[in-house]
Length: 256
Image (tube, rainbow, N blue to C red):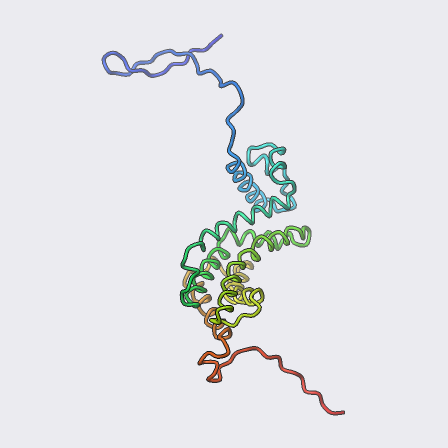
């Protein structure tokens, strides 16, 4: 027995009248296909939410596929392991940061202090955001049980983020504008000076979301100290006796 469905239609006098009509037929054939980028984005969003809500160890591939509304077969076709899925989540978060620092404000021939403050200010705002802080806490909590999680996070997160800074420092060193012979070490040191103290306070709950003014003040101070130490040896201030180059103190050996 087919059930008639009442619908509204316009009558001859311009008013609206009820009219019986057959119910719409169910669409036959294959369901609408989701484009691959959208399917991947859905899975990454579901994975990130599952990891943060349940923890890395407790969140299963079944849970993630169900949350995304997809089959486990589709999930495994795109991500063979949970580790590779988590690495993709971190890479997706990093892409957000890369879009933030992609402009010319953080590159080019501008004053080094301006370039560094621009770059580190944007990185700091991203790292200290609630979502990113939650990911850091997740990695710390799970690192002993799942060391591959920490490796994926560090490889796809902090290491990749510093590559842009390392490339800029290297170009400045080659041009003689700054003295940074070990760009990997110096880039890590600069990032730590600008962000690490606020990040630690945030992660342990001693500080809520830092105010922009506090972030900017930390970044500007770190950049100032860094540039003082990275001045070339022939700069006027270094010649005036303000060389801050590190030299280890050798212990004195008393004669026997």
